[in-house]
Image (cartoon, rainbow, N blue to C red; front, side, top):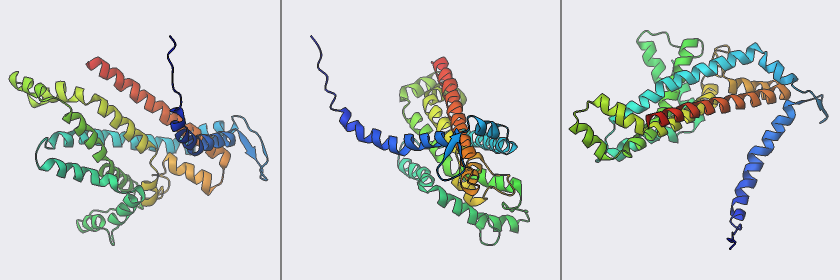
Length: 289
């Protein structure tokens, strides 16, 4: 007896497929088209092959921006993941303070990226900003527009303030899913807080930590709005990340071919490292279990 299948449900998915095709696939194909061709104007193109890719991969400008981007993502992950785990562990599990803490943690995530950049741009100014005025009053020479270290510290602190909440909420959800029986067994065995964290809480948070690491890596590696608003890529090019350099090349210089090639390389780097993170953490999760 042949089983009858109703494929009419695919018509419900079709609008989503069309929207994705219009908003993602078609622009991607346009970028691929520019990456392998050159033009002298008048909408006339000729084949350029891998010329733009070789130019980008041999460029010191690209290597410098990529190095700054990797350094920024490494610093962000090194701070936000442990900090997020620590705050999640310190949050209450039951009672009145639970919704209060959750709302407090969610507030930074509700602020648009350009607004975050504007807030910290004003906050760090010596003349009108609270942070800048306080540091200046303490005799600390702070100027994120002229000093490289100050600019980096400002961007890192801004990102930690904005996005640590995401790690906290994910880790807190993982902790809430642990049955009380595990904690009761740990108390009966006389396990210390570290042992409870090491053998109960951390293994149970592996999956949410995988999501947190992937999301924070991708977001930090693609960051554009906040550093562009706060420092504009300066002082000099010291905070010019790949995203800022790509926009400068595509819009500022209107070098569409190299910009298209750079955007594809940028995309492949994010895809590769996300796959590496996923593979490694999935292996660790299987090893724990």
